[in-house]
Length: 316
Image 1: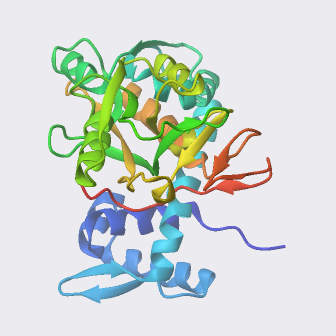
Image 2: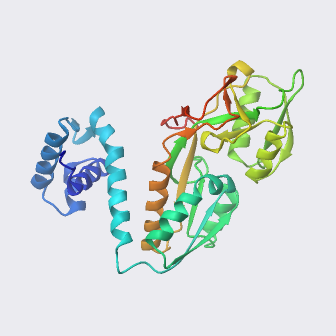
């Protein structure tokens, strides 16, 4: 039987990565530096790979260490979730979280399910609005947390998921020819709308905004009806949609990043518990299953075929 990884060693490993040095990590995990070093030697022996290399006065991950990091974070989160599920001193109270409705449709069911099972005495109050409005409500103290589209130019959020952003059209209707691209997008301050327009203008392709709405359902309906083209993150693709590529005359788009924000002064125990469930749920979405009706590069894909998210940083 394969010996399991040691949770304590993994926690120390993550602390080293987050702090950039063995010394600062030792302070965080309440161990001596020699104990931390011993734990890492044992972890490297268990893995059979070198995890760190010196980088000036600090350390940095090797390729194998970087590979382990994702697993380590997920194992620790799941361990904490399991412990919380059997904790007699369960959390109580309420927490207010905001999310755009497209994120709510794709991600919230699993998040709600996980959180409710672990913390049945906590009331979740969920608000669905666009990212900009959610940030304002957070500043006004009307929300405790917000799941938003990450935009480092305008807001400070912790990136919790990265995935491709796609041009989408109806798989059952022909694309418009010799006329401006009809768009269904969010309001003027929507980051995805700005990216779509900038991309089209960058290749001198004419466009016309036909539908404007912060509702993902409205935008998707316009696409499925063959009335407009829009952009969606890969995980939001629906039956009857087709992904458009450069072969169709549509320029590549930067990946979309989902960020998590917390209100200063909000209950640390509640926000930490909910953020752990959010991150764990998003980590579990490792691939998008293509349902009947989806097409990529003009080719129909079977249910067994998948699109895997690109784990790269956005360039904007």
